[in-house]
Image (cartoon, rainbow, N blue to C red; front, side, top):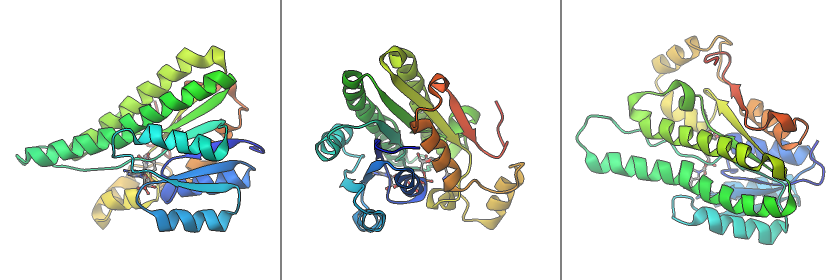
Length: 251
Ligand SMILES: NC(=O)c1ccc[n+]([C@@H]2O[C@H](COP(=O)([O-])OP(=O)(O)OC[C@H]3O[C@@H](n4cnc5c(N)ncnc54)[C@H](O)[C@@H]3O)[C@@H](O)[C@H]2O)c1
């Protein structure tokens, strides 16, 4: 489905990103696997998947990292057909504990990684895509952007809503120039990020009980949808949001 395509996946060293890298490579793509602090894990995946994967590190919490990452990706791949904006952090913080510094740190890091770095990267990618009159952006957002989240997750939910607006705006603005942009909005997916919130078995049981399909999604669910969107098989879907939440939130 993706023979000859060159794709950047951010946050590709674990979770949904790692499974996405593997899926895209299996479908024939060459992939720039971006990682933050987990160099070892990224290199292990790259080695396992072979010469069509190149690992590139950049801490997206640092200002300008999205731009630097793009430069390095183009150096390595020469051209890029698609970008998966997957990297994100959850920095849960109590709403009313009077720790203003903790609150500020949560918002700064979350907005920087989940939204600003994604915007910097999308901006650089768009300049490249417009020259080539083609390119696909897939933004991994969240059900939280639409349904809302718990009070300690306000920064996360808000960052994902920002990512949705960014992606929709790209879809509208550049459709005539061959650019496609899609939002993928998972509910809970079985990864380390979900484990962070679902450590308490009672919380996990409550969350699962709210999902009609009766279990968390697998990273493969997200990866398969992403691969399809990158394939260019459904160009008129551009601007759409693909919900992957076991019918727990139907819009
Ligand atoms: N797991 C879920 O339940 C769930 C639900 C909805 C949406 N999502 C979204 O799916 C995407 C992947 O999530 P996941 O569950 O695989 O999470 P994860 O925590 O396993 O992976 C997140 C990835 O982002 C990278 N990352 C985080 N901070 C970074 C930084 N400062 N610099 C560079 N890279 C950084 C991590 O290295 C990691 O590879 C995220 O955008 C997340 O918001 C996940």
